[in-house]
Length: 524
Image 1 (tube, rainbow, N blue to C red):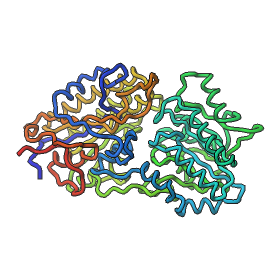
Image 2 (cartoon, helix red, strand yellow):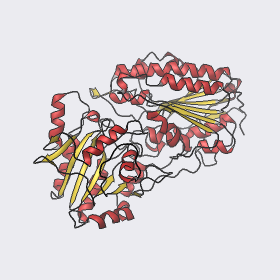
Image 3 (cartoon, helix red, strand yellow):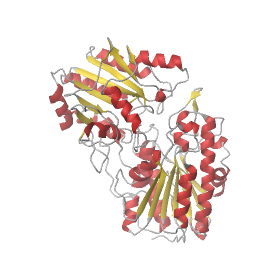
Image 4 (cartoon, rainbow, N blue to C red):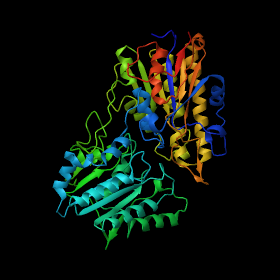
């Protein structure tokens, strides 16, 4: 057991999307007046953690994201993530599954259509167009004559004005197959239709449903024409905010989803796929009026809700987590508290807890509703409100381990705009001081880290950068107790997965035996 003995709690602060990079005019972290954060980095022990590639169970070179980052923190080890598992499955295994065989048997040699829906890019955070291409090629081999793609323009995990590059890529790919009846049916920006998460804005899902199922939307002769038209109306328009469009011929949509069809949601990441999965598969559905729901065989690239196994049919099995941190602590009687606002609540709870909605015994989880309005117009987000509740929880002295996620660096950083992201960082900074003061009064320790980078790189090749980064992230140990002299930073190459054993060390609790080493090492 550890020699460390804190009178107060261990508090983990996750600054979402706040990485480490050299100071420059487009680094909102260093350019901000986040005086508390800057001082903490200089005054206290700080490690630099890997938050991308193999550190979080994805291919090296791939940028980290909030899902895999929180998975790694909670898992205590490297778990092969869905992006890597899907990549492997697309080499053949996925097409041997019962799900693919069901789709083939349902559609091959018929006039029915195989539909694909999801985020449309090679960002490899939620999905990858390469996987779509492999499925289209396999569909042709298997005698499926008709396919339609319902595209959610990205501009978030890839440059903000990437279209019509991916549209042309898909059309060229289909041409290379010999021009089967495979076409883009409709689309719109990922932050406008379909891809809501955490039940934040079901109107987005309803608009996507009405677009793809009922054919309600502005019509164009092609997806490229739609993008060019919207861009001519607003040259600064980012893909993620593109208005919906329908590809039509003679006034009729070319690809409505209809009875007897099949649909594969191409996202392997769950959060922006789950709500549409519910819309297609739930008998009782209270969120909006679906009208006549078509009889569709719905399949996910992976499971989007592990506990309820939604959807029933999937192409790739999900990663498994042996003993997430929160459950290991719960078995030892540690009372825990987790809080964020809506847009990151699932990350600090569901993903942190090993993709499980099961709440560990003794853990309280608190969600504060996020703004629906664009976050660059409200860059402070709900930092003050979630801090209020966290400080109250700390002062109650009920909990030994508390964790919070501040979304601003990520959610505002995704706009690629420096001034709003600076404002987001400064709002977080005010909250950091409030939390640290509360923890120090009780004799506890605060660990400040991030799940991936974003806010530190808002420009690339002279253009706004809206995607995450592969930069390392800080891990600061704010410790004003006598324990601070009892440990030092260990030597080694650490990532987010090393946090679990670190936290159990500070709590003087038993870690799970298979976890990676602690970031700190106790002095002899």
